[in-house]
Amino acid sequence: MQTINLEKEIRYFKESETYETAQEKRRLKRSKGKPRLFTSNDFHYDEVTQTCRCPAGNDMWRSGINVKSHNQQYTRFCGYLKDCKSCPLQQQCMRKPPIKTGRQVQFKNDESCKQLSYIDKMKVKIDSPIGRRQYGKRLGAIEPVFGNITVNKGMNKLTLRGKEKVNTQWQMYCLVHNIDKLRNNLH
Image 1 (cartoon, rainbow, N blue to C red):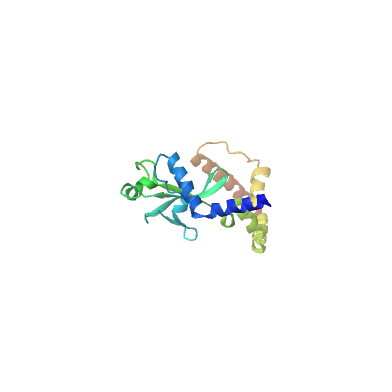
Image 2: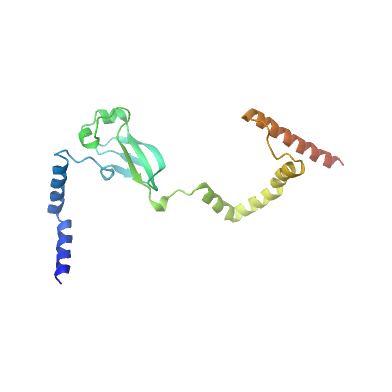
């Protein structure tokens, strides 16, 4: 019974304002009186429009989507250098005055709006009824061409290097295939 009451008191104390001020006093003592720097919670992030505003009200530009860090995906924003240099909240926002870039902040991407990988997108596309029809056509139209060029004609390696030379060699392989098709249609 005693422990239950103690847990309740601790919970009420943590939820009270005095706990927050006591915690802030301890933090100030540790940081030798320096004010708390802004965290990502102090920035105004709109997930729908993918925009961010700093505590001073300046717009920030999106410098990355799905940035991976510590096995998490983030959306990263960066403040404009001109805004950060003249910002009245600079002391509370940045450890050092900005030189090359403004303040950077990142927000964890919500799992519900997680971007699908290209493989997953392709699986969804192929599994749809329209995708099945299209893929069926591909099997009858494109796959035999590559099979004929690589297996029947024995042209399964590109022996040249460089984009221009490889393109020329591939066009010659296709030319051989097309000449063979023309020859078969004439007979």
